[in-house]
Amino acid sequence: QAAIAFLTESLKISQNNPSAELRSLLSLASIHHRRKETAMMLPYLKKAIPLLDQVNSNRVRAYAAIDIAKLLNSDDPKQTEALLMQAIRSAQAIKDLRAESFAVGELGRLYKQRNSDAAISWIKRAIATADQDLEAKDSLYLWEWELGRLLEAQGQTRSAIAAYERSIRVLESIRSDILEANRELQFNFRDEIEPIYRDLIELRVGLENVNKNAVSDARLKQAQPTVSADPNNIEIVLRAMDSLRLAELQNYFGNDCILAAARPTGNLSTDATARAVQAALSTATQDGQTAVINYIVLKDELVLILNVKGKPPRTETMKVSAQELERLITQFRGQLQTNTLEDFDPKTSNAQVLYQYLIERIRPTLDAEGIKTLVFAQDGLLRNIPMAALHDGKQFLIQNYAIATVPSLSLVNLSPPKNEPKTALALRLGEAVTVNGRNYSALVYTERETQSILQKLPGSLVLPDSEFTKQNMNAKLKQRNYSILHLATHGQFGADPKDTFLITGGREELTLIELEKMLRGLPSEDQIELLALTACQTAVGDNRSTLGLAGAAVQAGAKSALASLWFIEDRGTADLVQSFYQGLSGRSSQRLSKAEALRKAQMDLIDAGKHPRLWSAFVLVGNWF
Image 1 (cartoon, rainbow, N blue to C red):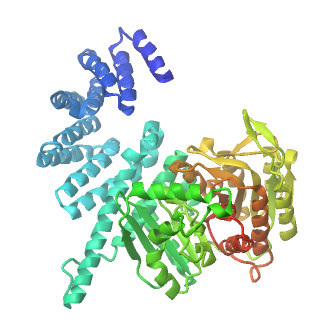
Image 2: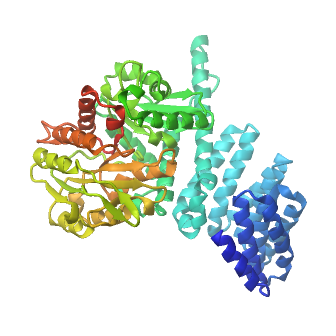
Image 3: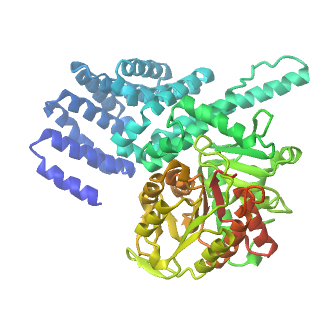
């Protein structure tokens, strides 16, 4: 409402300035369009159209006509077409190929509703126009995507795939630039960028299913398959999915800098991502006891891709809609967070239903291969699932496997841990505080939690309560090398990095952006191996907030992060932390991997009869060695 009031006032002031008046009218119309308030939008557009002829600048006229046409679209096809033809004339008058491409492409979209062949002709013309101007790549990727959708609708699968892949290559060459230049696009990510990757992935997965069926039929008939299987198809799907995860993180952070710093080469190109994904899969599975499982959530299907040592990737497709999956996940979180053990029955909760979708089909392979560690590359709201609490009808998943997740295969640092005793800088907030008007309860067991770190990891340092300030923390990190940074304090993973913060004993909000600056300022040999955040929480059902959790280790420059999906009683945290660090203590020949140490800690609580709420919330993100 504040924006509408401001723009309404601007409109009054700009009555004698056609360009300014046009801008205000279009801004008001856009707000109502986003709110799906068509009846309130149309009057602003009707006032804007006559102003086009009063504007002196052909460039302003061209882009304004395009904006009006996009907002009108199917509400008035004839007027929309006239506006786009006017935009083309204005763009051609000043040889603005970018504006011309946008106008021509929008004509293609308009024709899509009545004549697909004509639409394809216009879209191809838009592509040819954009291809002549390096400044028009933000137009080029859109029209390659649109061409792919049109070709897909006509059943031209191979040609559609080629168009989607061209679109992604163009997009990835300019994504950082357009995100920084157009902040609006950051918030339209799910409409303007994410669907391109998912359209490609869905077609590639469909092609894989056709190939698998053809191979199966050919074996039955003892003949050659009618459709040749593409050995690179799944590699391309994995690359595209990882590129989407990078795009999500980049969109979350608002730039490429953090991701480029996380990848050793600093190269985020499509080809570099493909190489990094394959290298990560090879390193991850080289012990023969680790499986990497990628999930892809499509509109009506869930796709699973399993990688184990020495075997080609295996795909499984389950018929379950994204909407149904979201319902199951949200219910599962609610079931896990019930108050008493008697209220939670893994056999009747969604723990077993989700196990059937996510694990059951590959369980025989995992057992046959002797797999001990599962590494999950999740998609969407699946990041909200504590995989440890899935149940096969007899046992929880964690009772059979150590578990870790990765925000992106191509970003995870899989270098082995140093062969030296681990030490931690632990900071705790035990007392109740009020920060920026919010009350945070006392965490009475954080003292016990951090004392156990001193016992299990000799040489560690604890900064309690008032000593836990940003300044002290920064100073201690610079004084000596710690392999672990442990923060026992309230925290929140929000939908925006600025809303993701930790509370210090100095009654301050420490954002992950500030934490990143501290940790990335350390020498590379002093890189934190593990960032532990033990009293944080993510919002249920909030996909963007889980990106904050997934990206915490990436952003902070740590190899791994240990964090909780929801806030749990700090007594339960203290028990788990003590057991976890016991597993990490000693030299490499004695200590467990981080994933195994977390499994041991969770198993100890299971054996003690503790509610899954207390142990399943903890997830290990990143390097699991």
